[in-house]
Image (cartoon, rainbow over all chains, first blue to last red; front, top):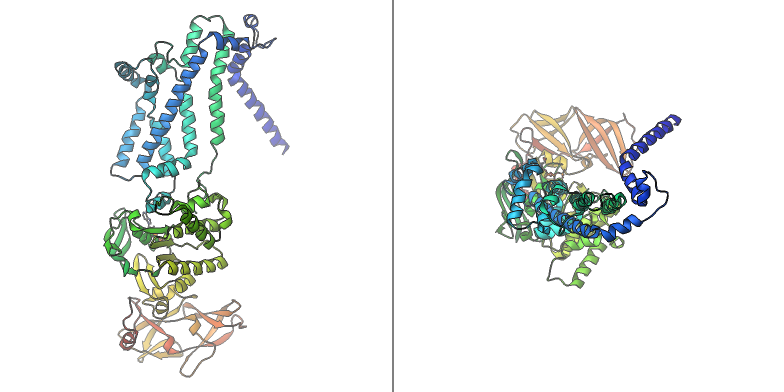
Length: 272
Length: 367
Ligand SMILES: Nc1ncnc2c1ncn2[C@@H]1O[C@H](COP(=O)(O)OP(=O)(O)OP(=O)(O)O)[C@@H](O)[C@H]1O
Ligand SMILES: [Mg+2]
């Protein structure tokens, strides 16, 4: 028993050290964002005097709020689009039985093998020809159909007991009702997972928003932050760190909220 | 009027695995029809074909005299209790039960509530209205499944072992309730069960299946008294019918070293399988009875009856005697049986052999 406690202690110490190491840039950023400008330049790691000056400045004299709203719009739109289209596509791959269903699915899934980098140029040309540059659709539409999401949800839908569909067939439920009333509520866990995942990936996306936006109109936070760094506030590290910390908050919120819903055992009680 | 009819129906899964062959039967409107058979013999498959959940590989299905092979499940006007319940886990008991009739526009809200209350009362789950399935015990879930089927009051109801998970007392109550409900609403009910008592007491007729083919169809008591073959004879009745192979010697059938019977028909083979029900092996005999002197090897005291086991050559036989009998294992006792209680089966075809006179008396037994 004693020995076990010992190993446990060592394990925890190692884990804490590893966590500190991985989290150190973030912690340093947080610390810098709370320091006055002169302390940063003095090369300190921890603030002597706490000040929220950097945050105030970030919100007042930069485009941060504008970028945040853009990011929020784009990420939410992609998230909703992915949830809707993936769940509909996954439904079609599971519930109506038709000839060639398997083949369709494998064709569909094989597009996962085309890397994103290979799609960028054709996508960019399409967006440009549609005159969508610097608009929200340019940032949203290319991402609303998700093969990964469809795959994830299909696996989940396949696990719903077959008899549930059969029971609803006897009653005469339409596919639409079955999808809304049974499939979606029973797949809450996977939907939350996919939603969280797609929100976070879109929020953190860099390359595509950089290409698709040439001015501030629809620019997202990640690009905005990079712009700030290379432009006017070059030496105002405190402000940049304040911005960086601020834009991490929504992602943390989404993670926490998502996690709360990720409980298991939602299908329990359906069958024997 | 015939409500459901299957004509030469076969079912083959994945084009190679034949599980049902040449199924022929019909169910009258308002009839309580029971399907029994060992596990895996195809009972659920038959129900699922009637419900339209499983394709019919060969043959025809008629519902209300209309060819139904290609009708959608919802066009068949049925309700069904699934063997594994198939409840919706995210809905409460109330929502689950109402699910079957929630979308019916021609039912008023009050009527729905009334039916819900009645169904829940029947399955004794009134207090569980707002529970989710995972907060219920197995037997309670099964009763929700039952309530969901009966609330729809569809003219045809299919039940796949609907009482299998209930305790003896509740099961007995439910049996009566289901029977009464079926009669009150005039439902055509097809009921799958493993339970001897359910098979014997609930239905108007029974169909016995084995390995994907029909063994016998008939009224429970007829099947008990006149089993068509050895399978039916040993499947219906508990403990099962005793059987032994007996050779013919000097025109008599020699059951044991000192017990022979005269055959009621003219033998065509040199040996027959002879069977006798345990309750027909009596502690006292009448004149003309055969006497078997046997060593008892097991004694089961059930309180109201005693079941005695003994060896007859290579077969274990059982005798069921009323009341409590104190018999010690290894004790040598006499059991009596009258020749009229014997059944004879062909050793090869396993069909029951009956004298032509007897066949005439029964007026053509349905096989
Ligand atoms: N989807 C399927 N694919 C292939 N074989 C199947 C399928 N469903 C059932 N079977 C086979 O068909 C046979 C009959 O199955 P069925 O479920 O009708 O049996 P059952 O009589 O209801 O048995 P139980 O009393 O155990 O419920 C079994 O041998 C089973 O293995
Ligand atoms: Mg079954």
